[in-house]
Length: 148
Image (cartoon, helix red, strand yellow):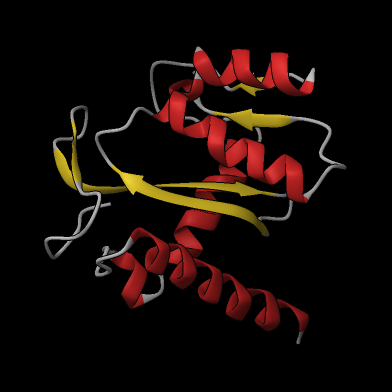
């Protein structure tokens, strides 16, 4: 996520050439937020996923499996296998063209819901903790709207 101001823990994502933060979320099958982590963009996805998956499993011990995209191969897969004795399912590309990947669309849909909030469309926050809390507040609003 591109940041607008000089913020703490800001880095450059080498793949996307964006200076800012990365957002990692763990959601349930309905798209409800279980855990969120915001950090500098220069940290690798596969290593950062370990922290977010660890916290999600601590807070929700009934989780049976995790799914992720190809960015989480390697360290995250080994971490989930060794720490939780579970499998981290990695969705692979089906074709060389655009296609809906099984289960991955749930996370992408949640990110799309979050991007509808002006304050989350870009990262305006200086502290990563504030960015995490803004995501939580947005998800509370979305969850309440679904209940009514």
